Structures are given as structure tokens and as C-alpha cells.
Length: 391
Image 1 (tube, rainbow, N blue to C red):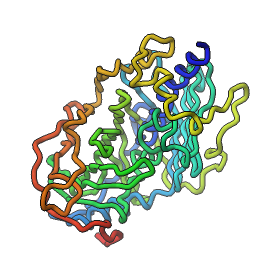
Image 2 (image 1 turned 30 degrees about the vertical axis):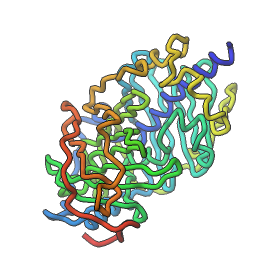
Image 3 (image 1 turned 135 degrees about the vertical axis):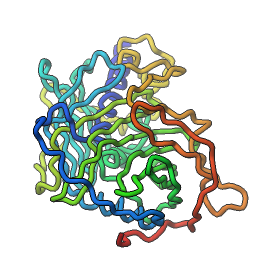
């Protein structure tokens, strides 16, 4: 019984830790800690013309992301709706190509609360409020089918996409762009990952090629993750646009969060290599989730478990029972699986996707909805399209 209680505690708070990675991957600049006299900066250039073709939109998005080599902020703030036990966190966020991420978060009263990170080989998380507060990690190569995948149902590399590193892979299938309202366009992609074939909807600003929203669905049409980006800022020295605020939703975990990031430093030289190393925390064990049995998470009382009455119950962390949905104050409403983007082809179509079912981008106070489907405007052959075209 003691072991079961221990594992439940690790799973529940481990999910919180992974979500904080998720949020930091979508992190942006915080007005709360910025000087009120700080300059907003110059407006971003308009890099797309009306009626831009698919390859032009993709090239603009990819070129913006490719200019980001390193990303660092030391005054981020993180808010997790529904988690009354966890106060607002202040954190340091760092990211660097390829696949490197680190977040350390703390409160003024309690000190360091979270240590999260990822490198080319593995990712880890430590949360002080866990009991006992061990450090969890998993190798990327062992992610599929492991307890780590059950805690976090989408590859950790997607976290960097939410941060602003998102690019379209030329080897994937892409469709669009389709007008999406509010001056945006939508592109849908069929992407190949270690966990299988996923469908991704990307909403892009029609003039400045900002990535405004990303929604990822599994092969069954279940929404795995969403990131809504707002208040983009242009960094002229790097010629890069990045969001100031990102709202994150993991519907299958019934969790949502929001990030504000203070002053972001872009491409300030190679960051300290120690940032990307699995930390050795004195007095805390290292637990390998990648080697845990695939069914271990559901036995821990994690989201999806019927055992809701444990000391480490997900309800403590703002996670409802499996039939409930925790509302988000940030305008992201989890999409039911039966109304998610489809992944099968229509009769007589060369596309691997059904006609568009848009996830409309709206301001945070509104609710994200799924309007009626309509026919796609452009069809593409399998195997992707050439990228890197000038715009």
C-alpha cells in the first residue's frame, strides 16, 4: 500500500511538472515583471501578401523559427488554473537548438518548486511538493509505450514548438492555407512521430506569419494538446517574432495553464551547457519512467484512473474526475473526440484528411469552437512540399 500511494503521488505531481514544461515550451513575455517604461519595440514586418500560397506561408513560418538559436528569460510567471495549492510561480526558461529546454520555477516564500529540463537524450522533472519529491526522467528513445507517455501523451519535442520553434517538416503532408477569420489562415498537416501519425492544425497570421494557434490530434481524432499564442513581439536584432503570452491546454489530462515571460534574450550566444544536464539533487532519488511498465500510470491514480480518493488524487491538483472538464479561463475549450479533426480521406480524394473542420482562433475571452466543415481549397501530393522558398 505504501508503494502504491508513493506511485500515485509521483504520477499526479509528475503530470504537473510535465505541464509546466509544456507551458514553458509555449512561454512568452510577462508584462507583470517588465518595466512600465520599457519600449514595446518596432512593429513586425508584413512578410505575406494577400492570397499567399501554401509554400510561401510555410517558408515564412520556417524562416522565422530557423532564426532562433537560443532563447532565455529570467523573469517568467506561470499560472495553473484550478490549482489553488500551487501559487503563481516565477521562473527561468531557457531553450536552445536542438531539443534543449530548461525551466526552474520558485516562489518568493517557499523557494525553488520545480526543476524541469530536456536534452537530445532525455527529459526530467522535479517538483518539491511531491511526497517524496523524487526526480523523474525518461529517455526519448524509451518514451513510446512507457509510463512517461501515459503521463504526457504527446512527444516532449512539441513543447519547443509552443515556445516559438515550430516549423513545418517538408517530409510531412500539408494542406491549405484556408482563410480562418480574424486575419488568419489555417494549415493542416499529417505528421509522423514516434507515437504514430498525428494531425496538426496550425493557425497563422495572414500578414506576419505569426503562429497563433497549434492543435495536435492523435490517429483517433482525440485532441492531445493546444497552444494559443498572443501578443507577439518583434525582435529586430534577431529578425524574429515571438509571442508574449501562451495559453496551454492538455484536454486528456484535463489541465490548462498560462505563461507570461519577462524579458526574452534571443541568440545571446551558446548558453551554459550545464543547463541541459540531468541534475543530481542531494537527498532525492532519480526514477526512470522510461523503464516503468506501460500500465503503471493508471495504477498510480493519474488522470483517467477511477481511484480519485487518494492522498495524491488528481483532484488535489485541479484535475476533475474522468467525466469532468476543468474550465480554462484562457479561452481554450477541449474539443470532444467526436468533433476533432478527422484523419481519413474522403471518397475520391487524394488527401489523407477529410474536408476542413476549423478550430477558430479567437481572443482569449472567447471560446474556441469547431465550425462546420467545408471543402479544402488546395490538394497536395503525398510526401510534402519543397520548403525554403523566398517570400
